[in-house]
Image (cartoon, rainbow, N blue to C red):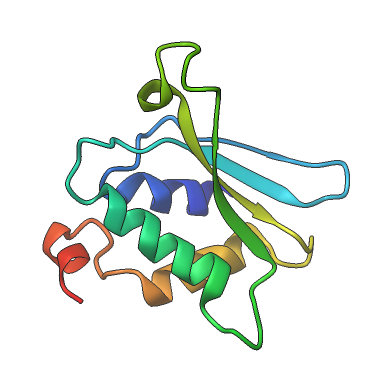
Length: 119
């Protein structure tokens, strides 16, 4: 898990306070927020969503990437309490495998801001 978390911290717009854990069924999860004022935040959502949710129509990865939020009228609004979750749906799909898929498809190096704009 540490390698995946370290990689996520390098992605532009990802805030470094990343939570993670494991469910009772042995599936894992990662929760993070984005700096929505960073001009790359929407690119990050699109790219991660593409890789983890929809990279192949016929063979989907056993992962989900989605937003979670408190109601907008509570706790300062969605800007302060919008988080993104990555979770596995098969315990055999490890954080290391998720990292391989992300590294193979996101810009290289992942912290290259121009790479996120190309494409």
